[in-house]
Amino acid sequence: MSEGNFFGFYLFVWLCMGLIYISGLVLGLLSTVIALLGVAVLITYSPQNI
Image (cartoon, one colour):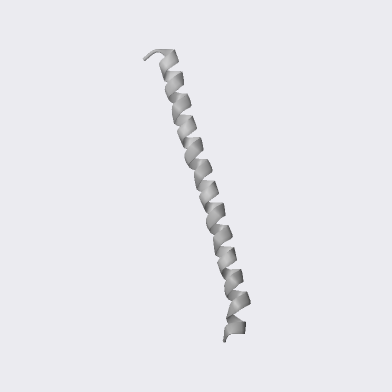
């Protein structure tokens, strides 16, 4: 395995790991925001409807 190929492979793996990490962060933030919105809606609407 030559140095160029090894470096390209290393860069490819690093990019994939970065993409997975970033997408995980984005999904975590989105789910947190959705959960907070759901809780806020429950708190604001449940006493008025009962």
